[in-house]
Image (cartoon, rainbow, N blue to C red; front, side, top):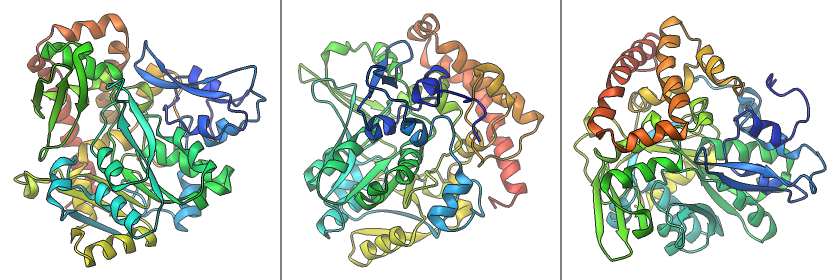
Length: 441
C-alpha cells in the first residue's frame, strides 16, 4: 500500500523521508523501548529517534505509524462496519452544535468546553479512571506534557488548545502498565496511530475505551510561538506560562511572565501562529481533518449564524454508538446543551480546512519527494494543483532557518496580505466543489 517504503520498515525510514508526524505511538509500543521522541531543533517538531543498539527491527513501530499512511478503508470497516458515505467527515451517526452548561469550563476552554465536560462526566460516572491529555510543562512553558489526568482538577488544567507539536501517544505506555480504563483526547494523527496500535496490541482496545478527537488544520511548529513572542517584544526566558485559548470565544492568547506581568493577545493578532510559514511538512500532507476514527470529534463552530457567540460553542460529530449515547446521557443530566446539526453545516464550518485536507495533488510529491498514501482523498483538477503550489512552496521555503528569521522583521499585516489571495481563491474553489457534490447547501 505505501509506495514510499520498500525495505527496512522501521520508523527510521519514515523519519528520513520527513513523514514522521511526531505522534509518539511508536515510542509507546516499541517492545524494546528503543524509541524516544525528541525535538528536531532545525524543524521545530518532534521526531522519533531509534537507539540502534536496542532495535531488533521487529517492525512494530512501522505497523503503528500513521506518518507513512493509513488504510482508512480497512479501519472504517473494522471500527464502524461500513465505508463512509461522506468522504469529508467520514462515518458518523449525528452532528451537533453545543456547549458545556458550566460557565467557567465553557469560558476558559477553546470553544464550547465540551471535551473537558465529557471527560469530567465520564470520570465521575465511573466510565473511565483517567484520561490521556496534554498540558504545558511548568519548567519548560513552550513544551507540551502528555499525561494521564485522574482528577477533575487535572482535566481542567489540561483544557484548551496547544498550538505546538504534541507527542501525545507516548502516554499509552503508562496506560498499558497500570490498572483502569482511560479516555484519550487527540488530533487525527494521534487517533489514527491509536487505531493502528489497537491492531497490534489488543490490550490497548481494552484500556482506551473513549477516543475524543479534535478537528485539526495543522500543529504549528515551535517557531510559531517564538516568532510571535519576538513580535510582541517578549523574551522567551521571561515567560512563566503560556495559554493559547480561553477567556471567551474565539479566545485570547495569554502570556504570564516570571515578573508577574500578564500579556493578552487578541485572536486576530496571533493568527500568525496558524499561517503556512510554520506548517510542519507532514501536516501539509495530512488528509484527515475531523478525526474520522474517533468516537466523537469536536471543532470550532465557524458558522455565520454563530458568529456573535462570545462565550464558546462547538460543532461535534458522534461516530460510534458509545459516543452518541454518552452525549445524550450528558444532555439528559443537564451537563451539556446540544442542538442537532445537518452534516452540511459541519462541512460549511470547516470548508477551507477540509478542502486543503482532501484535495491533494502531485504538487506535494514534486516539492517534498515522499508523501503518505491515504485512501480518503478527493479527485483533484488543474486548479487544485495551482492552488496547492502556494502552501507547498511557502512551507518548503520557510522551513529553512534563514528564511524564518525574515518573519521577525516583516509586519504581521504584510504577512497576512501575502496569504490573503490564496485564502480567497481557495475558499471559492472549496465552496464550488462542495456544493456541486451536495456536501454543503
